[in-house]
Length: 243
Image 1 (cartoon, helix red, strand yellow):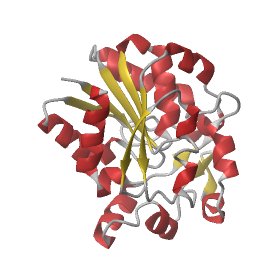
Image 2 (cartoon, rainbow, N blue to C red; image 1 turned 60 degrees about the vertical axis):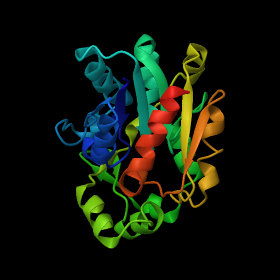
Image 3 (cartoon, rainbow, N blue to C red; image 1 turned 45 degrees about the vertical axis):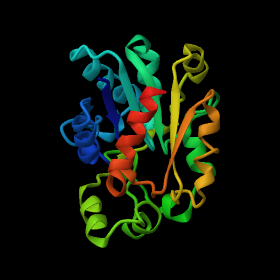
Image 4 (cartoon, rainbow, N blue to C red; image 1 turned 90 degrees about the horizontal axis):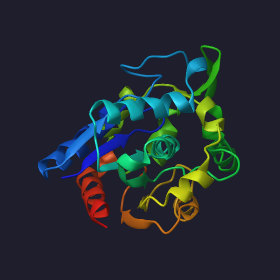
């Protein structure tokens, strides 16, 4: 039995993992997720949301439950958080899985990647909330580039639950040289139809190539695979945990 700790990305919350968690538990594993600070049960002014706050919240979840043999998975912007968590508690981590996720560079920050792949729609999503730079993806772009393989009803359901995202953590660098030195097993789940940045190759190999010898799984899905392909997503996690 493995302990899967699932970390959401921008605009999402713990709720996004519900079906994947149920499938993991059906196969005899334990699964955990939480709202990162800045949303849901962790409200916080966007000026106070930091990468460290995100990392510490996941570390507390793992330590408070004394979880070991943890398979740590992060979706999209969640790649920023899981990298930091692994750095803090490496002995509790069995594997780190980046799920069509941003992999922080050794120099700079993921904000540099976002800027490099900026589309007019993503640029238009940036706004000021509580004095901090935040973003909320335009619904039409979300439908066409994030979750285009879902029914209109499912798209409506997901859109209704999204919340503005604090963007300051994206500009904070992660000590990835130290992360790589840990030698933890790493994996990357690539979504073949991920059009967030226009071209799926900007995720894989664009982001995945920053990892050291990752195992990989490919799923025919959009960026929002936890909604459109939850069973395949859970199966990929279980398979990768065995590698």
